[in-house]
Length: 223
Length: 223
DNA sequence: TAATAAGTGTAACATATGTTACAATCGCCG
DNA sequence: CGGCGATTGTAACATATGTTACACTTATTA
Image (cartoon, rainbow over all chains, first blue to last red; front, side, top):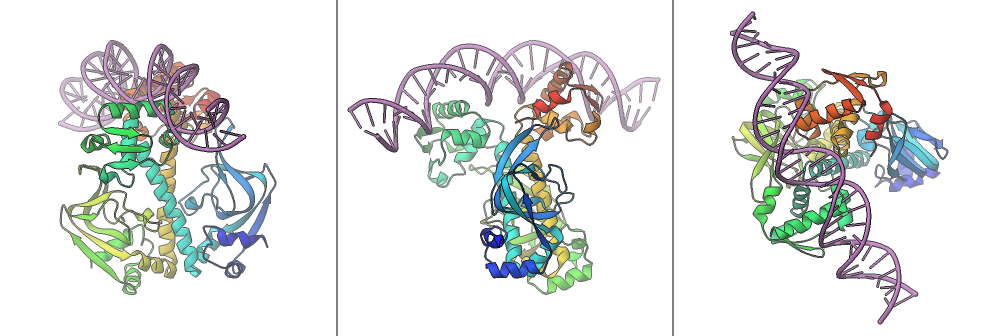
């Protein structure tokens, strides 16, 4: 059966295929088929089920009020849709989800999934891990964007790298990747980095950065 | 006992005091006392317990590398500390937590709390609600900050208000509150609103806004 | 009604960032 | 070695936003 991919899914990992089968047999679930181009979830629609992609591929896209869509992300098996939002009060899909090609989705009502969690500790731990990790990720991104200046973002980034306490760090991204991560343009980031070097805050050699003025950097990470 | 505030806490709501007592008696827990000024959690420290404020008041604050602190938020009884992060992989406190005045905190190891969730469905539903709602909140804030221009934020804000489809909405915040929400200054927001009015996109009368050019607004909410 | 605060409109100027384009450098691979 | 793509440095100019200050309107309360 096509449910075998579930053993690798974040929500069912740690369970054998037969254990999963046994658990699912105790509840009602469906496998829905979505031909390419059809929509599995509409932005703003209420979330009432856990939906896990079994095969195919889907994409999340935002739709503006004039009906145009912008692709946000790809979702592949065996990922779940909007897993971190399922049990929120009045939670609704933040994006619409459309099938890139013929896809199958396992649909479990959220009440049924709730009882699965209560029955099997591994399921509970898996789900908690997924949703907490998502919250951590969002919180981290948010902290970054809350620095208004590029200087602030870059200083905060440097001082959060491993080894910052030694005063020497190695950045793990290219300038382009970093600028995307910050939500700014690449030339702007380059200008700021060079400016901070001229100010004597840091010295940069390729991907190795020496933090020359810790206090000065700290001043930038305030607010 | 001072645990009576728990009946109003997000994690234990829906249970009677005696039910809570019975549940807690099955596990190990502690009530720790923090005199004013002492720290209950250090930023970066690993999260291993559920911590619920029973009395007093605490504050979350960020600390930069030079040791200076900036207050982020107040946390009052019967709230929990960093509830949405507890079960993340390698999750650590994003902020330090300090007692504003003498405070008491209920400490439950996260493994014990996990078994509470499995035993009592209401606890499980409560926790899932807390963490999912938090994820929704963060996701929503993130979407806002991902619009680079004030125009984009304001257009997105207007088109997410109830009644936007009728072309007439009523904003529920003052300009100052809105500008804080957007992370921009008040005069800048005022300038943009007036500019959009001059461009014929909207017409503003006090807190009532008429959306005159839906397509134009939609263009601003792209990207 | 008068006084006062809260909210809003506006202006001049400083600064940060985006945009676009091109040059310089590095690393990889034929 | 030589060429080519990826990465980075840099510049000129346009634009968006912050900063500061003040006038004006509306709401609140004495």
